[in-house]
Structures are given as C-alpha cells and as structure tokens.
Amino acid sequence: MEPIQSAMKRWMNSNKKIEQTYQAISEEVLNDPKIQAILSEHIELDEKDINRNLMKLYEYHQASKDCENCPNLAGCVNILKGYTPHVELEGKEISLRYERCSNKVQDDLRKEKESLVQSLYMPKQIRMAELTELKTDTYERKALVTEVIDFVKNYSRENFHKGLYIHGPFGTGKSYILGVIANELKKRNVRAAMIYMPEFVRVMKSSIQDDSLQSKMDHFKNVDVLMFDDIGAETISPWFRDEVLGAILQYRMTEELPVFFTSNFNLDQLEKHLATSNRGDVETIKAGRIVERIKQLSKPIELEERYRTN
Image 1 (tube, rainbow, N blue to C red):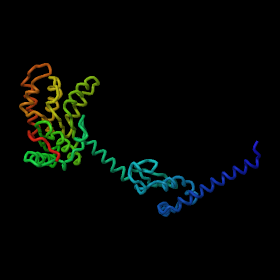
Image 2 (spheres, rainbow, N blue to C red):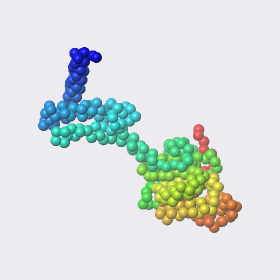
Image 3 (cartoon, rainbow, N blue to C red):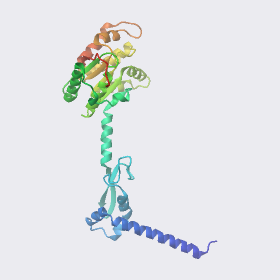
Image 4 (spheres, rainbow, N blue to C red):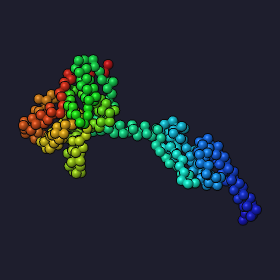
C-alpha cells in the first residue's frame, strides 16, 4: 500500500497545479481588453461575481468574435461554427448569446439564392450558366439576348410577361439560355424551375405510386417561372399530355405565370408530335389545345446556327 505521506503529497501537488491553472486562466481572461471593457460597464460585479462567472468569460475570451480569427465559415474556430458570442447580464449572472457571424450570414444568403433555382435532371453546365457567356455574334443571337434581358429586367408577378419558345436544331445552345435566365432571375430573388422534359414524364408517372403527383403538380403550377427543356423529345401518353402537361399549362395561362420552352421542333412540328400518342392514336384537337396554351404563354424564337464556343 502506498504510504499516506506520498498520497497526500501527490494530492497537494495536484491541487496546486489546479490552482495555478485557474489563476492563469483568470489572469488571461481579465487581461482581455474586450472583457475589461465589459466589466468596466458593469461595476456592480465584484470579485466574487467575476470568479463565479469566470468560465463563461473564458469561453467568450477563447471564441473568435465577428470572424476575427476565422479565415472562412469552414475554418470557424468557435464551438458553434458560424456563430459569434455576445455577453449578456441578468442581475449578476453572465450568459452568452450566440448569433450568426458575417460569414454564416453570407453563406446562408448564398444557399438561399441557390435554392431559388430548382432543376430536374439538368446538367451542371446549364445550372451554372452565365449571361456574360452568351455570344451575340449573329443577329438572331443578339435578338435573343435582348429578349432575355428584357424579360429578366421587367419580370414581376403582378404584370404578365410572356416567356420564350426557343426552337432549333441540336447544338444551338437552347438549354444554356434557360440556365442563364434562371440564374439572372435568381439574382432578383425570383424562383425558377428548370425541367428536362423526358425525365419529367418519367417522374410524374412514378409519382402516382407514392401519391405525390398532386403535390408535384401544384408546385409546377405555382412556381414563379417554369422552364421545360427539350419538349418534344419525350414519348408521350394521352394521360400525360392532357392531365399533366395540359393542366399545368392551363393553370399558368389562367394565372398569367410565364413558361419557357426549348425544342428541336417548331410549333407546327410539336403539334404533330403531341397529336400522336404512344399507342399510335392521332388526336389533333387535343394537341392543338396544348400548342395554343404554349402560344399564350411564350413567344417563339428560332435559333438556326449551331452555337460556337470560340
């Protein structure tokens, strides 16, 4: 058994180290200019009060205030990443209130902006499209960019402004233009949904099984700006044409909510495509109704020349 003298000596040394550590922390905290400023404003706090609240003051002392010691949000050194502490007093009790720091605020704003653009199976290149990258080297492209700028500049939920039906052969950059419009609208806090049409057909069909069809329909009916990419590329059924696409377009036409389209077909060609179902039936009247709604919601623009990157 260890001699009692040795045990007592070790206990005393341990207590001495604890006391030294506590004293060092106390001096470090009380020498902090920001804490000195706080204590000078609250002269009602005596030494006993300060000692009782020392660990709260130490937490404040250790924290990075207003991102002063943080290179960015990912490199935040605080216990609560992205939050900066503020000292509060209630009587003689000190507490810390954490609020979002400037880095956190900016990151939240960025995420909020990003959430304004929803995309369903759209490539990253389209989702990141920029207006400055659009070329205006031909008359038709210059006219199209003018239409894009005009729509974005004048858009409001109160005053209806038609979208565009952009048609032309593969490789003319039609989808990229939708991405540009969505991102320009995002800068103005306008919510847009970009949908790749063939995948949209598949998703809406599968929604019947999990009872989410109506909620998806309601979302696409009401989003600020709706964009259908590559309409006409899908294999369509009468149910999807009439009950899904027709219903969404009818609602948006009634409520004066703009829709953008891209297609390899002009409107006459699209009408023929929509008239022929996947069963081989031909229904020209119903297809005509869809095209008429498209005309009410958008302005046709043709792109004939392939998009050149250099």
